[in-house]
Image (cartoon, rainbow, N blue to C red):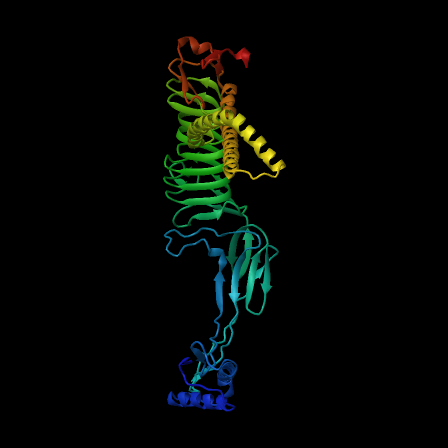
Length: 507
């Protein structure tokens, strides 16, 4: 590109185009560019015409004017045949542990074959050829498939697309989608199972030796349905919609499942509905929990039911704790809506917000009362002033500007006071709304029950944590409570809250 400066001495004449063009040819010859070759010079001829037209109309050029001396023929590089394994997108190159299976969703591309295309040679501004590499003849790979896969082909590629959820199975030139898999063990040798919790994949791990792990230490399993006949190892991470473990979970294992059934649980489990045959020091967070035998551990849920319960166990519920046979002591039975719903921080923020709103309420209320007194004090004077102004208007007499200013100032003051009143109203509504929300949580506390069908042995603690006021009501069971089957919280009025015990007939 050659730049013509506004300082250039160019005056319009009938042959200006020819003069400029010859100058450009001279520039090109100096750099050994090819001249008068139309494919290279279409832009040059167009730029010169535009330059001359501008000088003819305006007599000059205001800014630098670029002229393209040459447009070379750009080479088009060939496209090599390429196979893209889209189904491996979750696999990271730097990941130490490989994948056992590759989950896929319906309509996802499994494999894409980029078709090869020949390139085109180019030519530079000196007329020299720019050669592109020749493309070796390659045969496109072909996959056979069934109804669970479909093929889409266009000029650029061939794509194999999943017709259902599952995992990709490629064998002997075939692409298939399967939804069930049985393996002996999940280990470093087999690889992890990641991202399959939403792909309707059913996985069964058959290793059931009590001295071995079916899912080995540090392995990750994410699938829809998981059936483990044996144990889950140290630091293993499991995620499923439906889970059944016939062995035991390690105390450092982490499990998440919507519905879970575990024989012996020692690790961390988060779920929705949970059935545990034996709880040994494990931690559970769920909505509904049913334990056949609880030796030790902690449970947080809306509803907790235990058949046989030992000692040193912490139960936190919002609605119900029900024990069929309570044999131990030094247990904690806690009714706490905030911890079950994970709203501790939220409730704290809401309580702080109420305090802040009440401070603002008092501030605006004091200001409103002060303004109201001023308005009442000046009302008669303003009414007299209004009458006076109306009388002057009626008689077409000149009105004192000071009167109008005083009236305007008073009206503005009234408007400002009404705005403060509206602000007070909004603050009050917001305070009431937050208190109503906290009251609803509080009311559920009085409906909650802690039940032991066999009575309560001594040295067990009953706790009801209130929302407002934020206090905890506690009661330590005594020898006489072995005949008590139910504990509830009662409101006796005037901030008098007590934990009350009753017998089974009250159920």
